[in-house]
Length: 263
Ligand code: BV8
Image 1: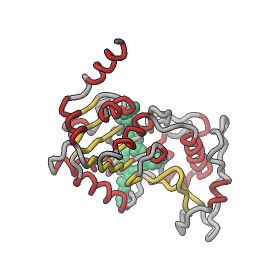
Image 2: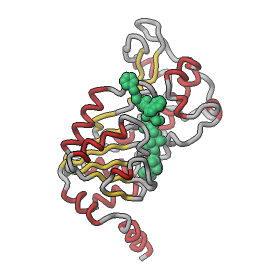
Image 3: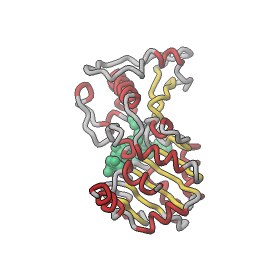
Image 4: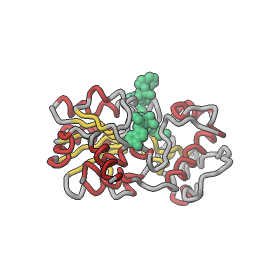
């Protein structure tokens, strides 16, 4: 009875139209942000840094300026985040999206640099901001060698007392290897952005999941759908910069909302 009561209160968070849209949609386009990984224990960009990185905010660390200023501190942040992601599991929200994709054409464009959508079984159409598990030469763009990545021991537990770590050098041109992510001030991969935009315009339902809608140009992608009259649903326990544009908002964590939408 208590579970039924809880379920009913959660279902109250849904406008009935949202459940109808989820039931009838054939082409679903998802834009996900750090919130979809929050229930897996991956900190969002809002979480202040501690220890070695405490003098920076995440927004400051994810910039070419920080990389030039202190490459070993920035490099160790990315290695640590990759290890942390390896140490957690996809959550019920990631898994619900992977299951839904078996019944409908579902495309995921994510702002996240983790691989939790993939590990839940989803094929990700666009990593708009790159990936924690891609590394390339900052000069000739050659991908880092497998043995160089092996040396980072990404499957090891996170360091309890992390130290600055010198980035490896490119085997071709001796320049530094850098994280394969898009820093603030850097252009997004054009093909990924275009594919994401196209998925929004071809969808019959757009879900904006776990993003504060602050970071551009990713946050504007769903507007392409709105312009065409495609219904846009925001799934986020909090109101965001995007909420005013959404046709519907579901004020629940994605790990709760998404399985209920598949039911
Ligand atoms: C570009 C990869 C131009 C790195 C990331 C003024 C000055 C300088 C720049 C700008 C400016 N104004 C605009 C800009 C552009 C800038 C920008 O948007 N800045 C913002 C801060 C104002 N954008 C850029 O610089 C982009 N590039 O514009 O280039 C250009 C063009 C041509 C040629 C050259 C240059 C590049 C942006 C990409 C930055 N890289 N990540 C890394 O990860 O280390 S972005 C990073 O922050 C994340 O990827 C994420 O997308 C973003 C935001 O992080 P969070 O806030 O944590 O996450 P999110 O926003 O998703 O919020 C969490 C949400 O989840 C919350 O709403 C919360 O309520 C919700 N939530 C919590 N729990 C749950 C939940 N939801 C559901 N379920 C739950 N359980």
